Amino acid sequence: MNYFFSGWGVSKIKNCDDYIFLDSTKIVAEYKTVENIAQNFEKIFPQKIEILSAWSMGAIIVLGILEKIKAKKIILYSPTLKFAANDEILEQLNNLRQNIVKNKENAMKLFYRKCGISRELYDESYYMVEELLSGLDFLENTELNITQVPENTEFIVVCGENDKIISPDFSINIAEKLGAKLVLIPNGSHYDAVLW
Image (cartoon, rainbow, N blue to C red; front, top):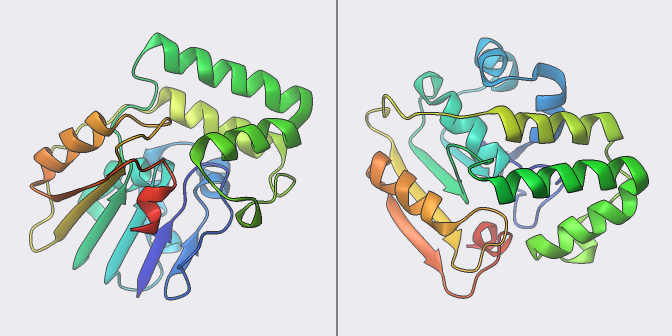
């Protein structure tokens, strides 16, 4: 079975018809931490994984539960081991948090625009404020290390060269650690990576 793990605040994606869609925002709202997600692995992934694709926060989750995953192929779009890697990102998270509380719909429209996500692919009213804030807490507090790479798994890391959400440097670093094929999308945004 093929699975796609979405990014934060994204409830649907193009070209995902052959995949079971996993909503990272809803999963993080329920389980809160990578450790809790790992403990509920069989509930989240009830069927054997052939291909696992994961984008942004979904990729962070996959990297956090890597030792549990047995898959033929793992494709990570715009991954990072620590989202809140510097003060500028922390400030952006805090601003987004405040804006979501003030006016969720406007905050999400601005976020989607920054990601390069077209209007027909999002519904700014889909998530409850608490779910979005839980996801931002997860992004701020999660820091991972790759300690063990699954054997017999092909890894591909994809990122846009102009990603304004997660620096391509983070993806390049992860590709090196995993021994993954690296795909850099010329002039690509955060969302363009997923369209590869």
